[in-house]
Amino acid sequence: MDRPLTCKEFIEFLDDYLSGTQAREARAEFERHLKLCPPCVDYLKSYQATVRLASSLCGEGDGGKVPAAVPEDLVQAILAARKKL
Amino acid sequence: MGLEPKTDSVVTAAAEDDAERLRLLQRGDDAASEQFVRDQMARALAVAGRILGNEADAHEAVQEGFLSFFRSLAEFRGDAALSTWLHRIVVNAALMKRRAMRRRPETSIESLLPRFLDDGHRADPLPAWPEKTEDLVARREVRQLVRKKIDELPENYRNVILLRDIEQIDTAETARLLGETPGAIKTRLHRARQALRTLLETESHLWTDR
Image (tube, rainbow over all chains, first blue to last red; front, side):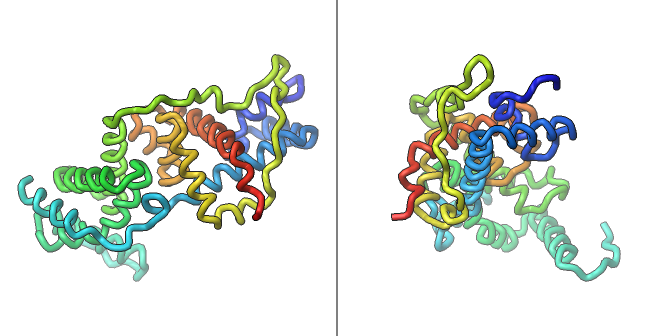
């Protein structure tokens, strides 16, 4: 690349940078941009934080509550319907 | 199908248990079927609840998911763990149910993405985020806010964040579930994350400790 990376390009390909799938030269361009652009550093951190916050919902139940007990009526409904298959 | 002697490992034992369970389920064993339903119910309800957002719809999707599972047992070749296969089926059932639900007017994704000037510089300033997001993750009200903001995303973008970031389903499987190419899923996920970031930023008052 003959000209520096723009912020728009940085954000557009940010996912490739974070996943480590970029070619070495492209990654070097990203690293150079980060050294020169504090707002993009902030954007990178906030993007990573967003992914961490979304991933933190993994394993939670409905509305953050994990079902405390197996609903017996649902189990019986499934078993009854299975008999008719 | 013979079983060759293997080293005594947890993974091997689990795989053997799964093979035996599959054999019983495919034979229509009632006790094995009931036990499987009971063992998997909590996780299935949690998954459906995360996609559908309410208990009643989650119950319906889980019921449909289990029945789809039993209907398709004959074709299952054991290329995944039984629980993983059920998980995929329940996710699919929940997504289908969601598609059939009446849709509310959606915010345009474009309005949630960062804007740029013609020269590629950012058009809008960005407020700073807190340094320690680990502290945020631990707070229940923050996780509830994240859930609420994910629900505000346009449907196609909400689904991809649900499947990739929350359910931790890989790109290829997500593409299959959503009827898209892996490349389209990758692009959509990136845009969905950017949009979620914008939505979370509007609630930045929650980032400060009270």
